[in-house]
Amino acid sequence: MARADAPLAGRPLFGGWWARLRLDGETRRTLRYDGLLAAAVVAVELVLTAIGPPQPREVGWPGVVLLSLTGALPLLLRRTAPWSSVVLLLAAGAASAVTEHQMVTGTVAILLLTYTVAAQFVLPRASLATALLWVPVVILNLVTPPDLRPNDMSAGYVIFLNGLIAMVCFFVGRTVHARRTSTAALEERARAAEENQRALAEQAVGDERRRIARELHDVVAHHVSVMGVLATGARRVLSRDPDSADEALATIEDTSRTTLREMRRLLDVLRTDAEPAADLSPQPGLAGIEALVEQVREAGLPVALRVDGSPGPLDPGVALTIYRIVQEALTNALKHAGSATAQVRLSFGVYWLIVEVFDTGRGPAPGSDRVGHGLVGMRERVALYGGTLRTGPRPGGGFRVYAKIPMEQR
Image 1 (cartoon, rainbow, N blue to C red):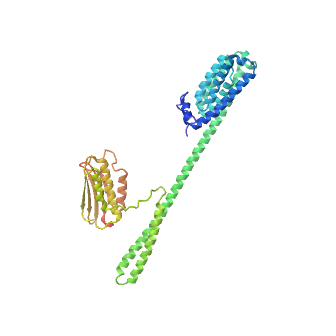
Image 2: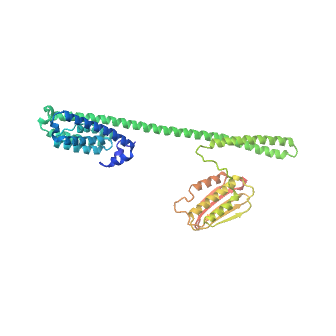
Image 3: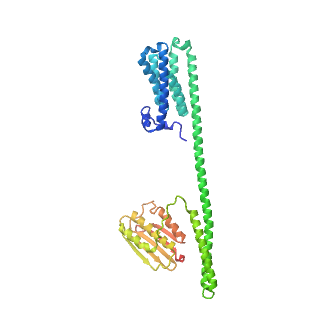
């Protein structure tokens, strides 16, 4: 939690509050209320001076008004610029001592400012500000002649009364400070508890979604396996027992509809509100690799495409994986290889298909991960189909991406 006087750190004695006056609405409200208080105290002092004995008016009305306003200025700034108020009040006290004019505004200001610094500052700063305010008062009481003290009280008694008043104001302020600190701590604890509760709720929702997704995955996998077995049986008995084959095909039809429904439920479970709208365009495959290579050529990287063997029938997911590997590798070569050339090689064998993309560029910088998050995506895609992925710098310079996927997936 931030310290109680953190907003005052580094604040200049004069001028800093004026910049905040133009920006901070809360500061303006505080100044407005403190200004009304200061104006009320000035009005009371002028009324008391007017109806009281003539001795306080020895400095003349202009002097009375000026001294009253000088003592009221710390009241105006006591919450927005406490240190400035302390300095201004010390100056007002010095003027009062020189002119021997007892200011009502100065008396009220020292009491309220003692409370304010105790309520706003941490204990060391509050104690320092209080000492700066009251030590001159104690010194003034010590040097004041006995005949000028009220009711001929002794210096010790006056100092005791002033100390008692200062202690009351100070400890009231410290009580308010402790209450504010406790309230702020409770609010912070409540906020942390609310965030923790929200995180736990989100985690519970995610765990439940994953559990449901696993269950639906098992259901879908079972239905797909059943359809495969029924399709195999129907094909075998189609020529000699058409009725059994028709019954199996009907079962496959019903199972496929059930599977589609379960797939929709699975997607609904996995979908979140934060996901963007789905892209309804067809997913790219092997046919899009030539267009991809041509786009990279137009972007400024010479690319050669080589295809060995015949791809044959491939699962759409495998074809999409090949496309994404080539796309990610060429994108990184275009961004990082500099002035270089690249080559894409697709090899389709009996047992394996190989995707290899390499360039002749300057290669990755030492200690850097050239492909970044793309490497993780490529590795996950290849691992999904039982393949392996190797990436790294080439011995002769440049970078190489090599993926090997078993052809049994077709």
